[in-house]
Figure 1 (tube, rainbow, N blue to C red):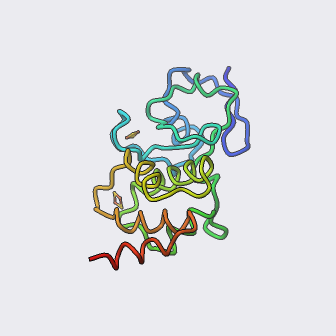
Figure 2: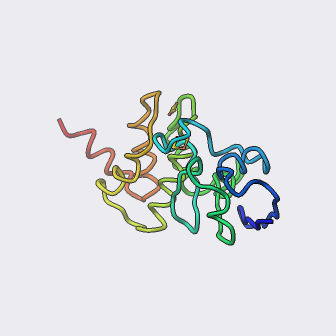
Figure 3: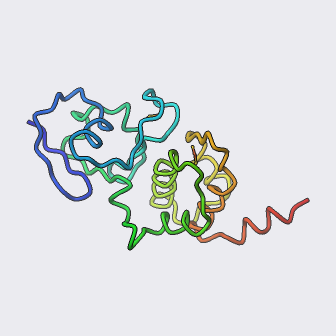
Length: 161
Ligand code: FES
Ligand code: FES
C-alpha cells in the first residue's frame, strides 16, 4: 500500500509501485493535465511538481513519490480562477494545439518558486527541455515573461532590429 498526495489530497493505492506517476495521475486519479508525449523524458509534456520542483512524471515510479507532495496542472488553478502562470498564458494566448502547454506552465511555475524574479536566460533555460511541435515558442516566452512580471522585456526584444 502506497500513500500518495496529489494537489493536497492523499490517496492510498495498491497499484504496482513501478507504475509511472503519469499513468497513475491519468489512469487512477483522472487528472489529465499532464500529457503523454514521448514516455522517455524527452519532451516535457508530462511535467508535474514534486515538492515544488519540476519532474517528468513519465520517468518516475509511484514508489519514488510516496510521502511527497505532487502538484499537477489542476492544482495550480481552475478555469474560473487560474493561477498566476495560467493567467499569463491565457493573457498571451500562448497555445495552438495546447498539448505541450501543461508542461510549459509547470516549468514556469517551478522556476518562479525557485527564483521569483528570473532573467531572460533563466526563463529560456527552464523552458529548454520542453518541446512544442506547433512552434508556439515566442508566445510561450511572452507568457513566461509576463508571469515573471517582465512583460516589458518582450516589447524591448521585439523592438530590437
Ligand atoms: S512524456 Fe514525459 S518527457 Fe515526454
Ligand atoms: S501548442 Fe501544440 S505542441 Fe505546443
